[in-house]
Amino acid sequence: TFPWLDLERQVCIQGRVTRLSREESEAYWKVRPRASRLGAWVSKQSTVITGRPFLEAKMQELQNQYPGEQIPLPPYWGGYLLAPEEIEFWQGRRSRLHDRIHYRKQPDSTWKIERLSP
View 1 (cartoon, rainbow, N blue to C red):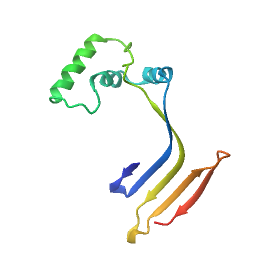
View 2 (view 1 turned 60 degrees about the vertical axis):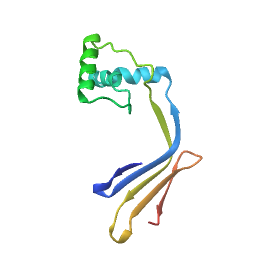
View 3 (view 1 turned 135 degrees about the vertical axis):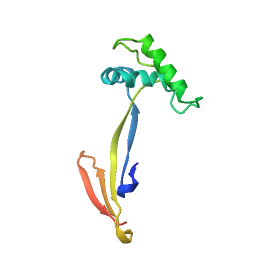
View 4 (view 1 turned 90 degrees about the vertical axis):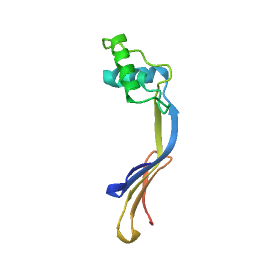
């Protein structure tokens, strides 16, 4: 679900999620900006840290360790692929008469589009 509450909009996507292979993750890793690759090494996502200075010091350490473009892929880093089966676009309206447009993937890979009641 991707909400944009100030705009009264939301997109919900449902489907199968699979982890990318190490090779696919490696290929994507190589096209990411250098700072983003270093940041992935710095951030052990969602772990508690002592503060911003910890991140800055770790980033400097890694910039020194990997001065060029060759930055290895962290063993814990990888991607996921979402194969959508249903997508709903929601637009808020007055009097709760919201617009809801629902897409459902059909067995022949076409999309059935329906308007849902708010």
